[in-house]
Picture 1 (cartoon, rainbow, N blue to C red):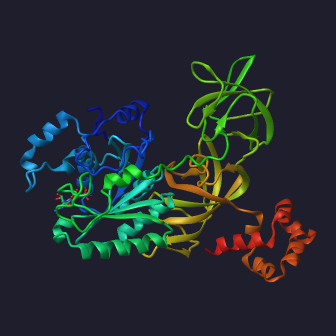
Picture 2: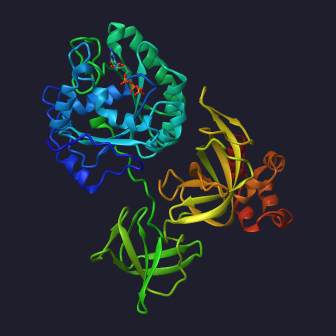
Picture 3: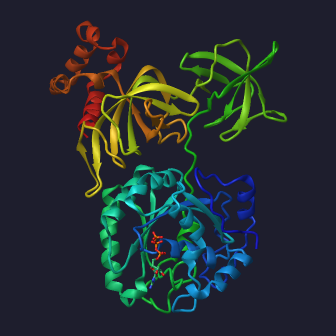
Length: 512
Ligand SMILES: Nc1nc2c(ncn2[C@@H]2O[C@H](COP(=O)(O)OP(=O)(O)OP(=O)(O)O)[C@@H](O)[C@H]2O)c(=O)[nH]1
């Protein structure tokens, strides 16, 4: 067995070695109902999932069970687990939650662990599971885990049903772009395998998920403790359940595609080892590049052609997202750290104002109108943050909110920059569309966020002005927008391009 249960703190990419190890893993799943192996080509990319649940819902037990039943536990670990059998449960099984105890201990000592990543595999696919703590104060860790996940497993205790925390987790997962949910109705054994109970909870969850716009939902009655419907089926106890096991759903889930639109190279360093060589170094954050491609340097807008792509040991004829490269261009251009080199035909947005969604991470929260440092990749800029609405985690609705955002609050904000900023939307690129906010007084990271859209200059217009414009026939509104009178008050070039229809969209956004 090549797979080990490995805990990793912080930002969580599997190393190449780990990925290779999990990809060669061959877990024994013969006793588990086969999904036609012929029809299911093995996906080489690991599926990333996040598990969320409230305290005591059985999250540790479920993850432990997944690792155990897919044989992702090393022999020595297994032996230790069996030996510590003071902890054995009524069924004579080891306490699976113990597999995760190292992390627990660190947490109790107050060592900051954001997210622990664990690796397991079946013969169809490898998995990386982000284990995040259930307490409310750990919301930001959940957001961190969710930001890279393809799928969220939400746990509820079958005896208790959905809680506010379930809604909170589902909402954050959705905000982070997760579109596939599994509801694991755990501890079903403690309800006497009550089908009506399961149906009621899954119905309620379906409504919640639909209200969030999530359509891919699978609800599964599970006993993590007994290992029913996790890796092995639970037909003996639940003949009424004909759906898939948790692992079957995970094997069939889709890996979120990189969704990048064009080539992006945030410049980390300008390399000038000698007179004759000048290269721009960084990690490709999207798309691909090859010699001969035309690129634009942002925010300056200068154009150049790629002559050479160099990595640490060789000259390459192409580079893709994730590659650390040095790019050589065909002419002298002014490029510095924090600039972005992008493909000419699919450029990110450049502007002074953007809309974003943020999660406040510090007790001080986010203060309206305060200037922060915004850091995205290697770029650091001054920004003013103005909240516009806040998410009510009890009912999942946004409400108008222009005051500060407290710790763990999720808000929509307007970002205003002193100098041109360059972003993709987070939907389009998770690297160049994401940022953190740093408080200049304390140097603390006070928020994590994602760009939703560029704000037009029109969005700065007083709402009443825009309402008046919208009440006019579209052609008249267009004329007024294009008039000198209006242009003299606003950034002329921007305003001219905006139709009343666009204004309606922006207004909707302001109201929303
Ligand atoms: N009967 C039964 N008990 C379960 C099941 N899953 C978990 N438990 C028990 O529920 C208790 C809590 O389980 P944990 O896995 O520690 O719960 P958790 O959600 O990870 O809790 P924290 O780690 O504190 O967040 C333990 O005593 C488990 O043995 C289940 O499916 N059936």
